[in-house]
Amino acid sequence: MKLTVQLVNVAQFHQTWALVEELFAKATKQDSDDYTLDQIKGLLASGSWVLLVATDEENVIHGAAAINFYNMLNYRVGFITAMAGKAIVNEDVYGQVCSFIKANGATRVQCAAKESAAKLYKQVGMQERHIIMETKL
Image (cartoon, rainbow, N blue to C red; front, side, top):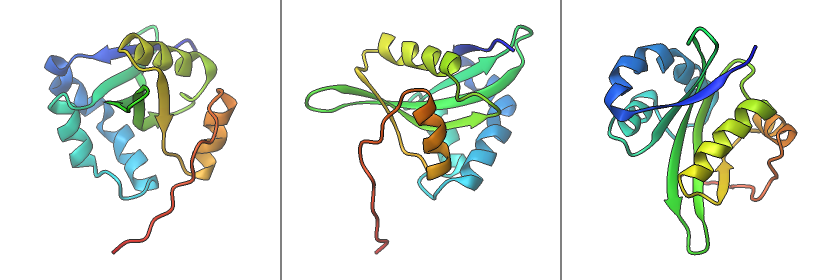
C-alpha cells in the first residue's frame, strides 16, 4: 500500500486529532514518560510541534508523527518526538518525512528511540549518535 505523508495545518488540527489520538495513545503507553498524550495534543494544537499524517489513496490515516524543530549552534534539527502507526517506518514514508523536515530548514533528523524502535530506524538509514542516561531526582 502506498502511503503519502501530509502536513496537518494547525487550523485543521482539531478536526484531525480524533483520527490520530489513538495512535499517539498507543505510542505514549509504550514509550517513556517524556510526554503525556495531553502534552502532545497541546504542543501540536499550539503549533509548537508539527503534525504529519501518512494516508492511503482513500485518505485514510495509517500513521502520524509529531515533529519539533529547533536550532543548534551548527545545524537545525527536525526532531521526531512521536511516530505512531502500523508499518510506517519504511524507506518511502521515512523519506517523505525527511523531505518535509529538510524543506522546513532542518539539516538533521533526530529522534529518541527504545532498542526495538531503533532497529527499525536503522533499517531506514538512521545511525545511533548518543545513548541517553538518566537519574530521576
